[in-house]
Amino acid sequence: MYYVGIDWADSKYDLVILNDHGKNVCRPFEIKKTEKGFNELLAKLRGLSSNSLDFKIGIETPNNLLVDSLLVWNYPVFSIHPSSMKSFRRRYRTTNARDDVFDAFVLADVIRTDTACWRKVDRGSELTHQIRLLVFDHHRLVQKQTALNLTFKETLKQYYPEYLDFFSDISCSASLAFFQAYPNFQAAANLMHQQLKEFFKEQRLYGEKFAKNIYHILHQKSIPVTKSIVETKSMKAFVYAQQLSQASIGCQLYLKKIQKSITDHPDYPIFASFPGIGDLSSARMIALFGDNRNMYKNVSPLQSIAGTCPVTEKTGYDKANKKGYKIVYFRAGCNKTYRNFVYNIAFASLSKSDWAKAYYDHHRSQNHSHPHAIRCLANRELAILFSMWKNKSLFDENIFLAQKSRQKMKNKPYF
Image 1 (spheres, rainbow, N blue to C red):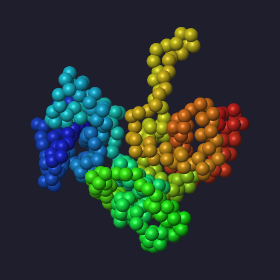
Image 2 (cartoon, helix red, strand yellow):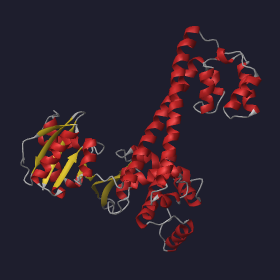
Image 3 (cartoon, helix red, strand yellow):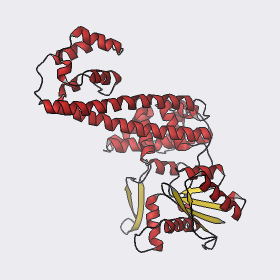
Image 4 (cartoon, rainbow, N blue to C red):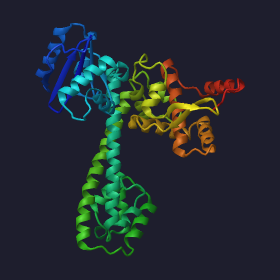
């Protein structure tokens, strides 16, 4: 076996190749982030062995152009979290000094000695990989949109607080169109009721009460604001309003692309059958589970990745109770994006499923907080989704409740 460690940078990669005894097969070398550089690496690997399974390649990030190329060439690639890598460095040096070639050596040697600490990169099918990229990029865009919305709202408070009473959602398309046409109170103050009706009719908002409410607010005395504040903050808010418009359009484009992609995926009907899961959540579960059913023996690794299960520590010995001390606490180290996905599914299921609501209410009755109860529900639902995914079966609430009744008859706890 050959063990390859890759330390990546913006424009180049440092590589170290070790054998089974931890000795350098060749001198550490560097390749550029170009097609020529990638081909140089491929020639170097094939010069050592024509069988790609004779290699284990380690890198800190799975999201990299070189990783994509190695997977296309059928080389097994493993990724490790940077925080773990930080600990492994101390195995070889007492200082925290960093060096690209040294990091590449550490990656190569650690994958040789501690393979269990690594996770194999598995993109799945081309469609699954595309869906995973789409849902992650969409999630980041939604986060960006939320940040823009908060900044836009904060800016309005500084010079145009009346605008916050115009719309329940100031980031909606009608709100942004109105603001870009009338970016301050003085610009909108002279609008007549009929003009407001015609403006919102163009935006496909036909509520008479809606236009009347804005007209009433505009014709009240406004809070006095200095001219310099109005001019500068109007400009700032206008810029954020334009960015919000573009972000909103981008989110819609992503949703359309996601909806189009998942209809062709074989696992889409499985996740869509679960209560509270729509097209976007189905795509997110496809991204989490992938399509390699041999990767996970049980649901525990997925629950750890999504952060729904707690961390349990067992240490020491309690003489009084004749058992070890056990400490259970919140799992902070996880994929925060996936945790957000499964939490949203759990929350949505409360209004779609009686048993989910009963499960949530049970935990709330135990004086657990709302986030704690949602986390417990998400952990339970992830186990159900895993079973559905593993067996390629749709969710049937009648079968599920019948199974729970049999468990109750056997004195097994429902919750």
